[in-house]
Image 1 (spheres, rainbow, N blue to C red):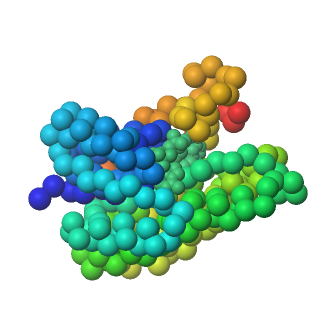
Image 2 (cartoon, rainbow, N blue to C red):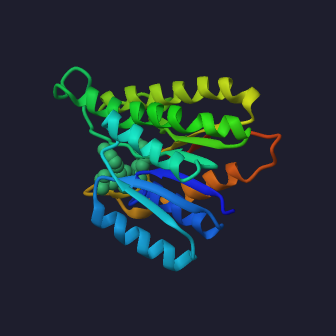
Image 3 (tube, protein in one colour):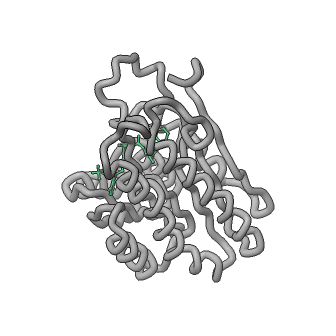
Length: 233
Ligand code: NAP
């Protein structure tokens, strides 16, 4: 049976690149986003290009009920070998002046989504004593910066969740990895007045995820920190 990967937010950017990489290596794909047209286009392209199966669900990952339903959908397909909690949003601002509700929005989207989806899917991995959870954190998980505001708060918290989950999963043979990319050229950076080659490519992040996945059972890469060659932007 083919291996299966769940990637949240798979229609663009880093999630999309991870899907391409794993599909090219024989994985079936389960993914979600808020835009059904984008999901349909992705499904058609990936299924044709890699001769694999792509399952999609339109949902808002910031909504707990929709996340739980998505988790149930994944289990109904037989669970997953790899879970990548990728979907996230970046709203720039400063803690002392950002709009009311920005923290809640980013905590829901960037942290609670990963928490609830992981809790739903990981028991099946534990039962099989096999599985790998990747949380797409950020250099903002370890380095606060002005205008990072609530994004930094949510990404620090996601790294915290990753670290405690790693401890919990040691005896269950489930691997847990935090990926911490710096500036990566995706739609998140649309409008930035900087040359594309000043950024990392989403494909570089995907290569790192696949490399960390592709180890023997006895080794876990706990954290990967990546930055553009010229450093942070
Ligand atoms: P992106 O290009 O904006 O893509 C985000 C993906 O997530 C899209 O498929 C988007 O589809 C989906 N998504 C966003 N909000 C969603 C929601 N509420 N419900 C369901 N799907 C949602 O983002 P990216 O730059 O690749 O970032 C991916 C992850 O990497 C994020 O967690 C981000 O914080 C992290 N990261 C990015 C960078 C960077 O420089 N790009 C650096 C460090 C970490 P829809 O909009 O159609 O829903």
